[in-house]
Image (cartoon, rainbow, N blue to C red; front, top):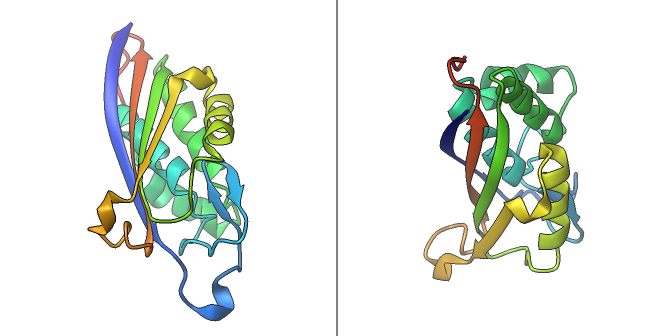
Length: 170
């Protein structure tokens, strides 16, 4: 087995149009945050799962959150868990498995502390690893960026994976 490491990033702005603020729920790492405006996105806007999908794509060399997800959206699949499943399938086709996941979130809102355990459990279940292999940190960045000022959410995600030696990426 070979160990590989990758970083993924994603960000979305909060919806600002009054008629669309609560058009869909705010979902982060599979957890629903009640009373928060949604994020602007064609999908459910789960920025944590998007960053994770991008990180896995860094190992498999196939950009799922591009034309693949665009086609899925056009066919009505807007659940970010489905995009993650595609990335995980790509990883499995390399004889790979995730070993560790770490998220770093920059946002003023929502407050993550009450949902961290739920997000860790959900992400772990989706990825077939133990919850103690999923780390989450969150910061406001001292309000220096638009994310820290409450205009959106930015997430970086690092993953460590083991893949079969000799099996090439996409």
